[in-house]
Amino acid sequence: MSSSARVGAGAAGTFRIGGNLKVHRIGFGAMRLAGPKVWGLPADPKAAVHVLRQAVELGVDFIDTADCYGPGISERLIASALHPYPAGLVVATKAGYVRPSPDHWTPDARPDHIRWACERSLERLRLDALPLYQLHCEDPAVPLEESLGAMVELQSAGKVRHIGVSNLDADQLRRAQHVARVVSVQNRYNLRDRASEDVVVDCERQGLAFIPWFPLGLGKLAAGDPVLDTVAAKHAATSAQVAIAWLRRRSPVMLVIPGTTRVDHLRENVAAAALDLDSQDMAELDRLRT
Image (cartoon, rainbow, N blue to C red; front, side):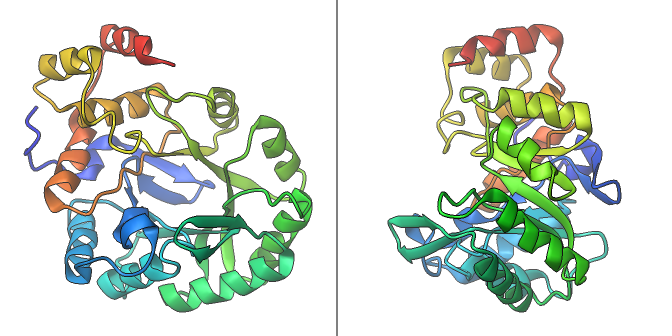
């Protein structure tokens, strides 16, 4: 395959989040659309808007963001670029962190904050209900059950359709499931970093979407590796495309959300939807596990 091939996200196949949110298995992570350190406006807001619109034109119908990206900047850019949203587009957001400064990510998952954050996300995204609302982390100062309880209340009030969690281990996931019907888990996971392997297995067993963040390891996997480069050369692909294709092949519940600020990288990432790795490729790539 060619890294410049005009391939749409539809080639990746689909997954139904919560049974009724049908999306392609390559989406878009909107964290990097904010400025440096995920703080403030990007240097070129029009370019960020263009990337989002190009993503949708390429068939991307799942966009992941959070209220703390900017803070608020990523959500506003999404609405500016795409509202009124095309039918079938799922915009997922998260709450649970606050950003007092560019260098600080402070957990705040108090029920009152979750409720307040939901209202602000609805305003910025110009939505009546959030299709997928995710708890960004467990707050050490607040029982996980209380944070999720606030999300269940928002769901009952019609402001949230589905509930997801992020940055939880397998035991925390089980605790969360005693409170809410969790439909997705978003944890750090990629070719080299598989600390959440047991969570992936749980998600596959239960039919939950697993959304890996840092799917390219902050770009390190895109930079290549002898093993990765060998598989990429076999398929006339890039290292980034192989890393994305590995995630898709790893589990049918995997929903990959590579992010970028550039249209050429966006097209390259989406084109990985057409890259099918075989068993030999997977065995070779398994050597990269750390």
